[in-house]
Length: 519
Image (cartoon, rainbow, N blue to C red; front, side):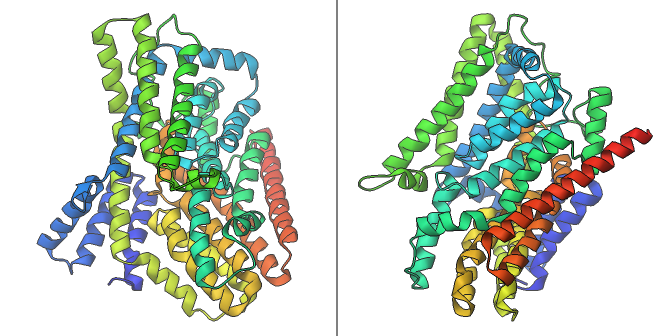
């Protein structure tokens, strides 16, 4: 069943279950089980062995610890500890009280995470978690739902990193482009020049970013997002009370210290940012042979190790600040344990997402979809459009943008080089755009999981509320890619894409205004 249409079954089953039950662990578990059965012709013993192997490989593979995964999981625990100390110390409350005096409107409070999401462009993981920690006290005070905060975080993190050459994503893409250009004997431009030229061709990234800001400014609330926002404004409940435990949410665990000050939040956050960035630079320089420029540093940096050290430094700093307020070992221990416990739901989801991702990889789902592109005989003008759609579905099914990049970028470049050399860069840009779109729709995307965690939102609520926005941005992008393929004019296609987003946002804004008048 590997590499055939049947390889889509686990991913499709998982998506149907997520939509039908809204139980992410059940849905992911069912996908893992069915995929493992398919790999081993429904042999129970071999299926059990496959599931154990996939689970073990998350932590221990090829005779060594899987340090990358372990560092990320430990970082999540450390982030939970940091969050717990920020809450217990009263730092989050003090920052929220200060921010609500400075930023007096819901509109301003919504713009804050959007702006921070663009500013923190170094890495998507770092972006997802750092923005949530900074913005949550303010958005909570203005009764902005956690689902909307998660949308702001998720829909700025990947779109900004995918168009930034000085980021972990940019470095990875530039490195991949180098080998692709060499393989296709393209010498008109180098990998960095190609990346820069592809930035305006990434229609979805710009469409998604614009829609985030328009949503904040014009109150573009659609579908389930409107339900979450109305509940937050009318009752003060920032999450669905029927959802139960939510990763990273500690408000009911202990009372905040009355002596809390803003610096109890600011200092740990600064330690997190400074520590992570310093170690990203340090590990990048250590892993680069000879003189290292900025791109080399970000190409060779160890993001997960850097997050671990940044998180450890921040956790120690937050613990020290809290111990000055209250030296009781019992209270410090409770805060420590509650922080770890708060992150366990996110870790369960992430581990299962990695497991189903591995199963789907073994079923060669990505290769099957890639072969469909190679076998399709279409007018070359439709190539960017087709590649955007296939890359989007591949990232949706596999939950990985980078995996989609690795599979689809070489294929897109080869097809374009053989049909119309002018479409090489648009075709590869469509891969990047489609991958981010699919990533935004996928419940097994690690970036989406971490965005939910950073915002303190139920994960499935985040995925379902983000879907309409992702499809609006994707629809405008599809039209943009069709215009690009037909006319060859980059800026006309991009401008049309953005105009469509603006028109759609304004129409939704007016419709929401009319509906509120009728109430």
